[in-house]
Image 1 (tube, one colour):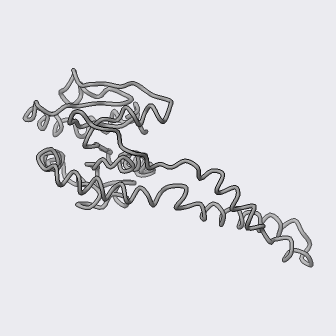
Image 2 (cartoon, rainbow, N blue to C red; image 1 turned 30 degrees about the vertical axis):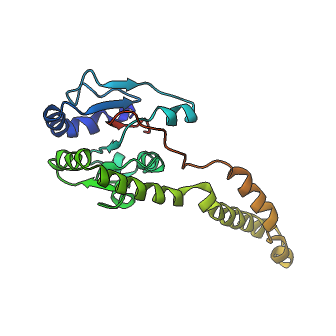
Image 3 (cartoon, helix red, strand yellow; image 1 turned 30 degrees about the horizontal axis):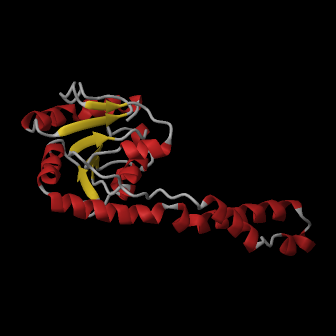
Amino acid sequence: GGSGHVLDFEYVQKDLRTFFRRNPQIDVHFMGINHGAEVGRPQARHTGWINNLVQYIQTVDFDIGLAPLLYNAFNRSKSDLKFLEYASLGIPVVASDFGPYAASVSHGVTGLKVRYPHEWGKHLNQLTTDAALRAELGGNARAWAATRTIQANFWRWEDAYAAALGRVRTESVPAAVSTAACAVPAASAASVASAVATDSVVRDRPDLSSFGVALGQAV
């Protein structure tokens, strides 16, 4: 995570420290900012910022993702990008039941949500000891992520362009010809959509050679 997550980790550090102290066999991998010291793992693996998306995805080698959020107005306004990144790789998440994750994460289906502090350790213990549960939640999360790709949502762009062009032309063209002028060539809009739909959030997950818990680099 970024530096903006410092307060988030301070909020959950007591419970994460307790879990990691009781489970020294668990590998911890931070990407972006290294919060290892806060959670009692100063020697945790750390990967700095990676600008290339393909290289970033290839570096993700963990099995459980963490997404803690402190309860405040700033975090309430964040997006669910971190969960989307995890989900697109089939990685189950343990996330705060707050802000963007309250609606995006389906508890017990695509991940586990934390409402009370002690649940960080409880949910992590569930996932680290149950491979079948990890696979089930991860598979469900990946299926959900497939609904958030450009391919699945290009029509939203088409509708937005059509609506915007319609408003502009209605305002600038005389009423007598506004009806004809507002017609948006469907083929043109579709061409724009297909041109940007060549990439997908969902990619094949790299082979995992070790088990670990980590926090991705999304802000």
